[in-house]
Length: 299
Image (cartoon, rainbow, N blue to C red):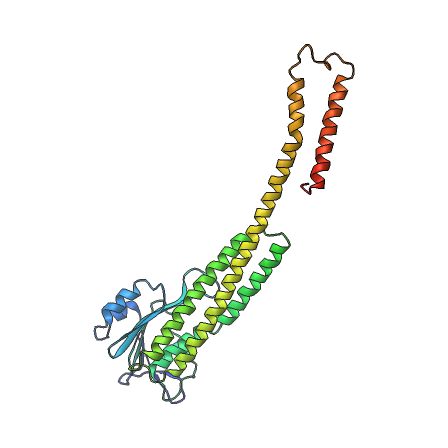
């Protein structure tokens, strides 16, 4: 267990034995053995599988879970934790060891009169610092994919588009959940939050990021539609060529069927120029059909 107090300079300092700690960092196993902590049963159930971020306001305290997706598109969350917050203390539960540098994450940005809720807020802000750069990088990737599609080099674009779209869906859901969580902290958790204004600003920031992610998701969907339209047009051209070729050879197939019967009374059977005449008729028919299809812009 790690125990911290807020120093006069806004830093998060280790709490010495006997000193009151306003922030505790526990593993899941340590929290399971911490019988004195509030909301233990519900939190242990939530920690079993953290799929999304949420906060629940209960009498005298707030509890919830937070899940930050990996900004580089790797599967699984970058950071997932549970929290229990009241007016004087914050308990963070995280078993991967990613909160051992919590004082560096807060980095002296705490006001001297800040409550423990500001530690949670600063942690969320720190984990969201690179989100705008991440979304801008995704936008650049989409622009590159658009250029490939317009240059008709989209053979391998579909797989990349689906991966980007999946990533944007995850980020969009994350921002919506974080915006809702911050809204709950600002509007409904008066017993645990001393100053709701920073939480409102964070909620607005998450909502703007959600709108940006939504626009990029629509952009990816439009590129998917353009790519599908190109593939459909390519298939239509192929089918059109096959149809024209079949139509051209249909009369020739009829001629070969007739002349393959070899009836004794066929005029051309014993005619000296019968074979060249059949060849000439086939060439004339094929040429006439090709000219016709070209005029109709079917070739």
